[in-house]
Image (cartoon, rainbow, N blue to C red):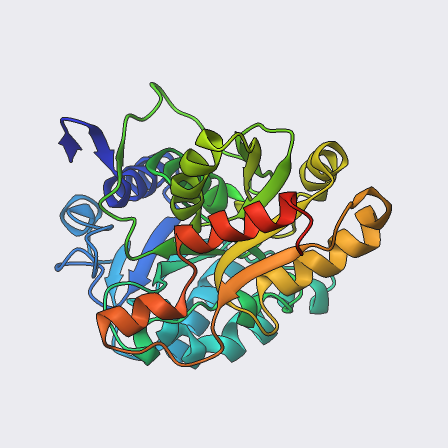
Length: 330
């Protein structure tokens, strides 16, 4: 679906899957309502009619079963894409993702590869309640053998999805529910984005801001205001949450000597916590002040919209923290 302004993010993902299914007959899709219904957010719309029920498989409501089936399919040479109707549901498949998908290449002595993509919507902001507003990137971060990426624009969504499908390792692919209707003109022709490279969204000299997914757009709003106040921020979209692109991160910190991490993940044991540990290990002598993480509160997400917004970081908090850091108040 093209709009006047460009391509919608959910359709950029659909284009990537469609193109890869056309390119490689081993690529298949499975999950709840991915077939005739076209997916909970229409990422697989029309693919059932085009490729048939064996390659676009509607499954029962049994995440552990169809995720395990995807592992077996990958072991026999297929390249399955598993959709979690909501990423929170994939907690039911944690064993299959961690003990099977993540480890089988190692425990089989390299006899099997598991080229599987696990994708779906998550994040806060649609008043879906605590169980449907999960941010599972931190849950899976400690699992060996998997890669984790988070898309944030239609352009990187399409390029990352194509790269994830082609990768011979399992990739967890995080999409945000509030970004599906984001529009953007896509580059002409085929392109693939790197799964392990951060995106320098904006160069600056005073302060480094590290972020990912929806928070990229909150940070851009804050940076517009900070720019008017003469604060020159370098914004980096992590893209790859495992492994981190420490080369890009370190290079930026050596230039700005200050860093703020902005995440929608919860503070305790989150992505920001791991990043700060790595920054302290690799860049401690480059820092002029302590690194700061701005994270969601460690509470279940409320259903009420106003309370929901209070649990996550907003642009004004990024502005206040940046000003304090530049004024040596933190």
